[in-house]
Image (tube, rainbow, N blue to C red; front, top):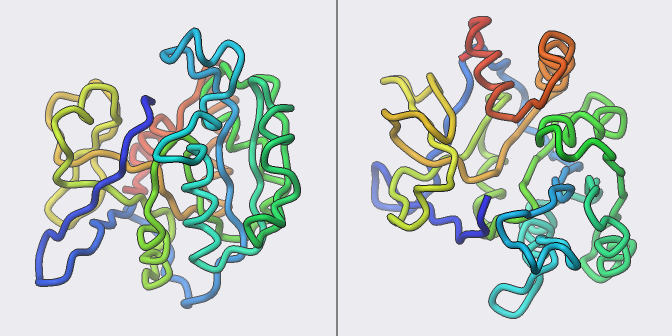
Amino acid sequence: MVARVVHYHQVVGSNPTPAINKIKGGIVRDKQAINKGIILAAGDGNRLNPLTLIYPKVLLPVKGKALIRYPIEALVAAGVSEIAVVVGHLGDKVIEVLGNGSNFGVRLHYIFNPDYLRGNAISLYKARDWAQGEPIFLCMGDHLIKEELVKHFLDKQINETLCIDYTPEQHQVAESTKVAVDDSGCIKDIGKDIVLWDALDTGVFLLTERFFQAVDELVHQLGINVEISDVILYLISRGHR
């Protein structure tokens, strides 16, 4: 996905808040601190060639700092103490630049995905053991994410949650993942090519072990490239909308 600023706007009420949409069937959980985050930074960023032939997309500067600093700083602001960065294409350069996370006030762990061309759900799945069954934040490493976007999740009590943008700017639409929601605010369809949609995927998720289980099931069924949007559609097809 081409790097873009994530905008979120008020839908109802006087205070601007992100629109949060859940997959039906989510388990209500007690409010708790979420200590772990995962950032996907494995892709080859081929739409930005030739720049990304020699430099990872997530390290390209936007407004004076590397793209991946935005999700890192947003997770830290939400109280996350450990982040797993899933790397692949030119991953050694990502590790060299970010280091152990001390500059951000967080512990960074690195997980290498040699199959990064098989879809972003495969990169996420590589971090399953590290997550150890805990609820986790998931962020895309090439999205500009405001700190308050992740903080907002702490007030929610539904698992498997995606933050969406109901009022994107026109230039954001073409390459973005679109989301259609039902009247109760639950996701009913998602994908880059769907015709009828209500909002755009911001690349910020709250996930539980159930999502990793769904990735595992889907990979065994398809045996091919698997995207996170495919996993959401799979959960919807099984009644978890």
